Image (cartoon, rainbow, N blue to C red; front, side):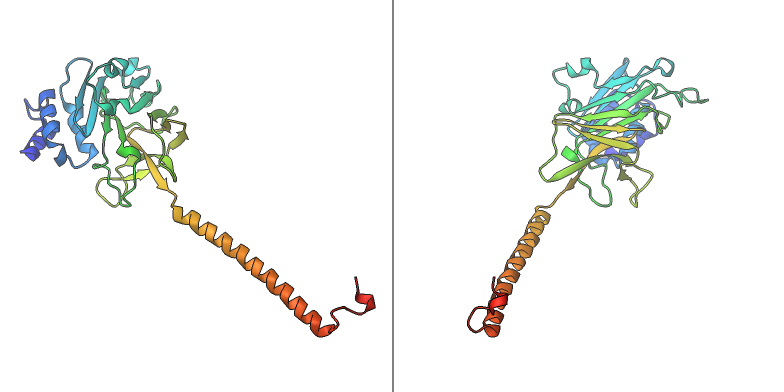
Length: 271
């Protein structure tokens, strides 16, 4: 049943591409969604009520915002009125996104392109982002941004994504990455840091990237074994040096007794 619902949503059949159908599908069937691109395709075509609409499940929080390309002056997510809602998903509070006023400058004048909405999706797990090397994503949190019908890349002013109220685990470092679905040996994609920079603050990690897609903070753990190994090597070197000194002193005393049985060198060698 779930796969049939997904196919109907993707084929844009009448009476299926509406918010009620999507809510029902996400609530019951998110396990059958194969990748993030499929979810964004479903969200791109549905009818929404008003200027914006949100969808929430335990694994996703999606927000669709209508825009007018000619009047676009930048955008902040999540909007303040959304955060003030008591029952809003906790996922919406974990990421802050700033879209620059120049976001649409290169595409809004392209012929036959209708720019009418931006989609934000906050993923609460990485099920749809499995790379070849099983990379570890900070807090299993991924933030997706899409302008429907166009590809946004090579921006003069970067998009800012802030992963809020979070810190890196002990013995780890983090870097901002994006999901490049055009690469990787799997059919889904691979994490890449191209076009992104990382700023690590006390309780926030800020990513600035020159394109739109899905973003996360990738972790790199520094094993305690490496530190222990370095400490062991240092102790071995110090121990070897001490043994060398002891042997040298012992050899000097032995040779001295052989050359000068009296225990003292002749007059001119005395100190």
